[in-house]
Image 1 (cartoon, rainbow, N blue to C red):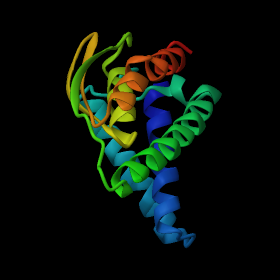
Image 2: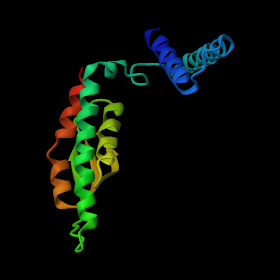
Image 3: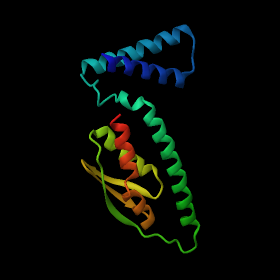
Image 4: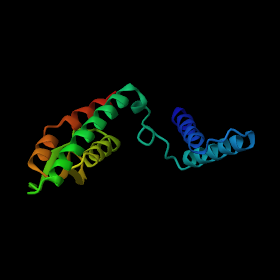
Length: 158
C-alpha cells in the first residue's frame, strides 16, 4: 500500500509540475487520472519495491547526482579537447566493467551513468558485468577504476 500511495503522490507531483494549473476542476481531474493509473497498476500487480525504489529518494541520491554532474562536466571538457585537437588522438576500445549492483534498477543506473559520461557508451549489460565502448585509453581507465560502481552500490544499499 505504501508503494501505491508513493506512486500516486509522485505522479501527481509530476503532473502538477508539468501542467502548472491550479484550477479546482483541473486539479480534481489530475488527481482522478493519477488515481486511475495507480488502480490499474495495482490490479496488474506491478507495484512493488523494484518498480518504485523509494529508498533512492533519500539523501544519498542527491549527492550521487551532484558527483555525476561534475564527472559529466569533466568528461565533456576532455572530449571537447579531443575533438578540437588537429591530430584527433583517439584510441577506441571495448572493456568489461564489473557491476556489483543487486537489483536490475541499480544495474540500469550504473549503465546509464556510464553512457551519460561523454566518451563512454554502455553496449551490453549482464548481471555482474557491463560491456563499455570507450573512445580513449584514459576514458577506459577512468571507467575501470570503478568509482561509478561503488557509488551506485552505496546508494542502492541505503
